[in-house]
Image 1 (cartoon, rainbow, N blue to C red):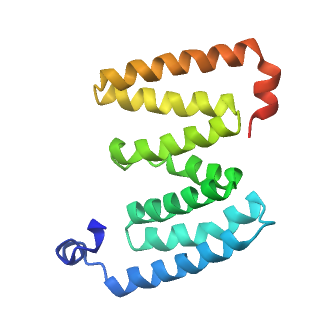
Image 2: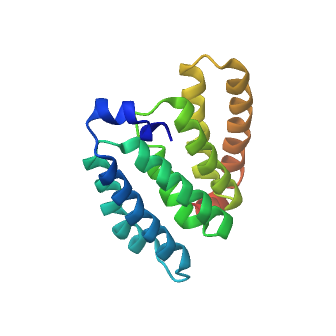
Length: 168
């Protein structure tokens, strides 16, 4: 990870030992939450907040995003889509990260919403992509996104009851 580059750490005045400690704590947290079969979303949110805060205190929110993204991917692989979706919903709301980074968070969130047949969250994530592609003048991706967004919105209008039922 580029954040471990000693030149960057020296410029930022971040103690590598503090980063290692935060990473070790997060790794233990990851082991615990992935092992739990009965972990409820509200319980996960409550337990995750201190880890997010510890990276923020180190002024490394990007590192927190990467660690949580890795956890979301792990949850996705395990079929724990509600928990993965919670993480992704938080990640896509970060405004101080480049779109190239944010795009991968949005794409994972979109994939999760599609797997859950959650058309409303799919539409929201497509709108996030729409804005990002538009701001970055990525016309090819924007056109694909607009087509997909139109289809999802049609699905919502055509069967709102199902869309509402599947909303997570």
